[in-house]
Amino acid sequence: MFGSIFSILLLIAAADAAGIGVTYGRRATSLPPPVDVARFLARDTIVDRVRLLNADPLALRAFASTGLAVDMTVPNALVPRLADSVAFTRQWVRTRVAPHAAAGTNVSRILVGREVISQANRTLLLALVPAMQNLHAALVAVSLDNRIQVSTAHSLGVLDALTTSPSAGRFREGYDAAVIKPLLGFLRATGAPFMVNAYPFYGLTDDTPLDFALFRVGATGVMDTGSGLLYTNALDAQLDAVHSAMDRMGFGDVDVVVAETGWPWAGEDWETGVGADLAGDYNRNAIRHLGSGVGTPLRPNRTFEVSIFSLFDEDLKPGPLSQRHFGLFHADMTPVYDAGILTAPEYVGPVSSKVTPAAAASVPVPAPDATAAVSGGRRWCVPAPAADAAVLQENIDFVCDQGDIDCSAIRLGGSCYEPDTLQAHAAYAMNLYFRSNGDHEFDCEFGHTGVVTTADPSFGGCNFT
View: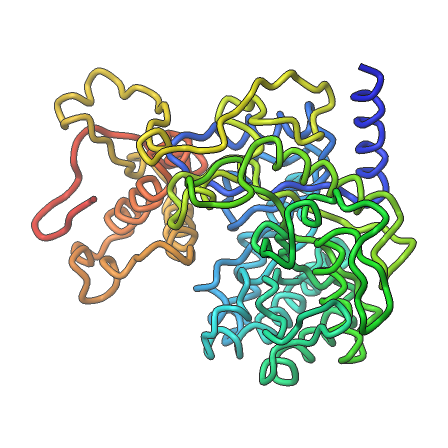
């Protein structure tokens, strides 16, 4: 008992020193409403930051007055528009950011895109820094630049493939001068951090054994022959490879933040290292280590802000089962395992580390209302009859700015363009969002301008899927 209490005190000290966050993704079929999530995180955990993987106004509103810092993410598809138009960027900040900041949401950062430099998309790459510059200028225009930073999160794919040790870290050739150097210059000028998604789980090899990834090596460690520094865990090695790359470019003074790290609690039979016990060990040790003040061998005597991926499992994500099982909590907000972030730790029984595809799909969902039977159980999201026109336009803009939602059907020439009315286009867009996020009623809320119906709004060649 005393051991567990002492562990919690250490983790709370780590939170005070460096900041502990969680990422909040919503690509799942069964999730609690954002307002319940916000209340739970603020009341029952030691986290002080949440990273939204989009700019969802429902989630932003939910975190108002919680005191939690919120990082919101601009979808990749929107980055070129922000880069191309100062006027559009200023409007986006005035309508999507400033109202939430004024209403009490502690928006701390706007993250431009997600792992943009790893996308190998020339248009996106060249738009990244101009979009960040335009966003910062727009924040200056509404006097929010002292409250809200602009940055972007990177995978370790920003490093050259020849980075075989921390001291050999360097950025990918061709991207270093064209994109990363001006990016680092922007971060230095504005005081924003370089943010990296670091996952020792994905680095597991014969040369990077499980114990090294899980902070279990102890004092023996692994020597970096290039620097003579001793490494006792894989996360330090990954972070110092980034530090070395930044030092090479003359930007060693820019702060580094761990935007994402985590460990899957379940996966396929062939996946190595998955398991709830291992996930608990990794996340507890990562939080404790990064907040301890020990630092890394190349950056000693400092703390690191860290966000754990992810708050919930996301069963709509593609890829192997491990991709869908990084969640810290079930949909009812009971812990999958003890990650060390609850203020009052609960006992968590044994959890199977292997989940079959059939079992993964059997997620409980709320039962539809009785009238849904006439539509074969289907439901759709449409605008409320008295919905304000300006808000409906905001709904359309929000949905169609999402990087993974296709609004081409309501563009000129699309199958749902006619009738060319705000109500009709809003109905299609709002239903797309509702459907893409798992048909949750709260995903049709749209600031009280959406309603769920059992009457199929499809017509002619326009199909509301």
